[in-house]
Amino acid sequence: MTTQSQESVRSLIPARIDRLPWSPFHTRMVLALGSCWILDGLEITIASNVGEKLSGADRLGISTTAVGLLATVYLIGQVVGALVFGQISDRLGRRKLFFITLAIYFGGSALTALTIGTGAASITFLYLTRFIAGAGIGGEYAAINSAIDELIPAPYRGRTDIIVNGTYWAGAAIAAVIQIPLLSGAISPTWDWRLAFLIGPVLAIVIVVLRRSVPESPRWQIMHGRGAEAEESIRYIEHEVETTTNKHVEPVDESKAIEIRPTPSAGYLTLLRILFREYPGRSTLGATLMITQSFLYNAIFFSYAIVLTHFYLGPDADTSIYYIPFAVGNFLGPLLLGRLFDTIGRRQMISGTYLLAGTLLVITAFLFQAGVLNALTQTIAWCIIFFFASAGASAAYLTVSEIFPMEVRAKAIAVFFAIAQIFGSVAPLIYAVMIGSEDNPSTSGLFWAYILGAVIMIIGGIVAAVLGVAAERKSLEDIATPLSVVRATGVGGVGT
Image 1 (tube, rainbow, N blue to C red):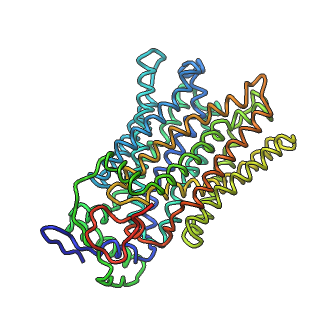
Image 2: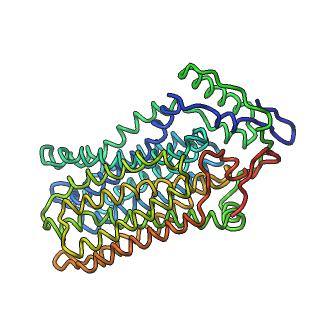
Image 3: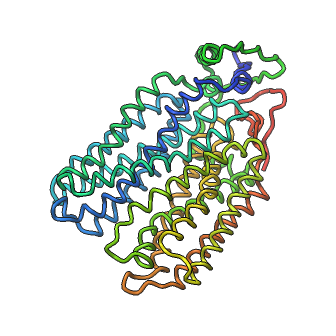
């Protein structure tokens, strides 16, 4: 029940969401919203493998440098999209952004396939479409993670968010499998890369249909003074749960109500004040987790083919098949370990996965230096390392989306995502310099590159062990008090 006075709103909506059992409604919602990560994994994998082929005269014939800038432009688009749409999501709501950001991604990726010619105008068009596609995906991250956290009952929030974030690698695996026949030469070079870029937009059309039944976040509505709309949304959710589970949803005790006074939307200046004045420890935690995982992932992923060709397979080898087990291992980690983040706990599991991934990378470095690895065993080692690293990295996104007040949640996700991407973007360059050229690859350079990545992940694990927040099975309002709360029973969370 929600009652509203001229000055404040008293509501049970957060408690009503958190007491719900898991149901087919929640499964549908996760499939509809979590698909943004599948799109990003699919998009990046296709772009990275198609990109190198665009320099061929039978395709676009653009320079190698121009091809290399495609990933950079897409990354910049993601950062800009996250920051812009993070602000809009906190102001206008989650549901509107579901469709806006997806439409932007659809347009950008579909238009990429229409690039014709190699002139300055054509190259500018190509970069613009990659920027637009990246902006759409970046905006998806901010809106989608906020909505999932706010709609999923507290006992299931951790595993759900982690598994959803891990589906990035399901998208990467799908792309790795599809691109093998697509780029094998059976299709004309004029069309094969265009069809590859159209796979994501086709999937986006399916996602639009799935998202039509996802309601606006009742938490967002009530925090913005939309009591009647929030009541309508929560009743719809409760009805769906009761209908699909054949279980009666019990009423919530009035003692669990919160009283809020809706406040104007907060901007990024307000967010910075909140982050560094009221939550310095949590801000340090979020930034460290995001930066360290981003550095490791960008370093390994973008040097993956370089390591295989320089040290094991030779310059002309096709490395695409090696991406499939790597992607599968990354997906299985969150899928199989996600539940433990709700049962064993956030602090223990996040620090444990970071420390274990770093330690295993150190072991791999010494095995590589000893010369006992080949392409197969090197890939197996990566799969094992990133089985744990993927679960930890997914939990980093979960952390920054649940430990700050609701009014700034999407913007907080956007800021930490942007910070992580900026730091992560230098990792491939550092690794490339340390590995050396194709003609003279440095074994000692790769050894120390591995050690560097391992140390960075271990630092993330230590910070998580010291500053980690015990958010498992707790209501979001108990983890971080909303800025608009007047009174609430048991609500806490303001602190470091």
